[in-house]
Amino acid sequence: MATDYDAPRRDKEESAGPDGIEALAKGRTDQSGSVDVDEAEVAENFELPGADLGDEELSVKVLPMQQDEFRCSSCFLVHHRSQFAKEKNGQPICKDCA
Image 1 (cartoon, one colour):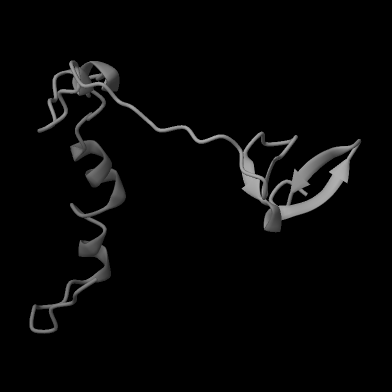
Image 2: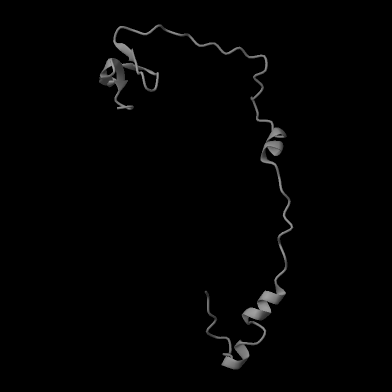
């Protein structure tokens, strides 16, 4: 808190006057009148530039699993054989899931 050292000092009796906690509490206004806003409803009104993908076809080229890859039986992702950690019940497990 900044202190103005040039200002005249108050007595202890005066300092408890209008600046006391009770006076501040009385002067406080109720600010609980905030409006509840549904975030999903507000987000529907926003349109992002370039976000119109209604007539856009998305295509991904899917490659079959290669000879040096395996499918983890825990996360079901296809990993390179360098990510192989162990076998559990005869099923391969990657290093991330091990």
